[in-house]
Length: 189
Image (cartoon, rainbow, N blue to C red; front, side):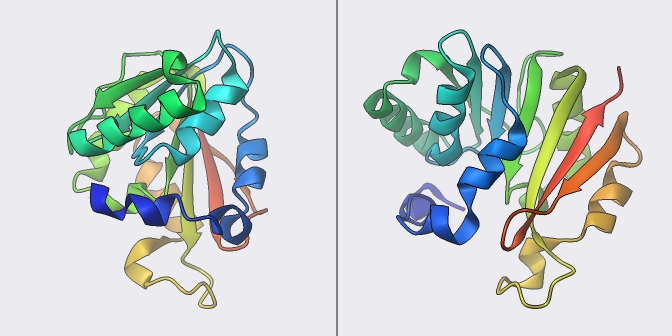
């Protein structure tokens, strides 16, 4: 998605449609955590995570479009959490996150869009602390009732298969959202 689509990310009905409150609860973020929002867009989840990790926590907001990062940081200033957010201009094959720095890396409807999924997965896992969690939120490919094009959906089996070659283990699929999976993988210690 281009930065011109930011209005769709910030639409007022998103919380109700996607139950983003349940997603944030499922993340189990702790005060002081270091987290990353990969494909952060306008910062819809970035500021919410910043509030949860508190003033001693850090949120790396990763985007490949400088325009999105500028919009995101303006939103963070308006929300009063800019000091906790680190904008990161990533690349299509590397999120450019510090090695072994993140407790949690969140990707909301992003992974399926990657041009280089293997390289991105490898780099994100490298950025996780040992035991850290990689959380993919994707529209359920198994459910034909989810009104999203198949190209923009993923199945749990697909995620398991794609990550089976990396040093992570599939932990669980949290099924609390109306249309999306919350797929949690954990980096090997």
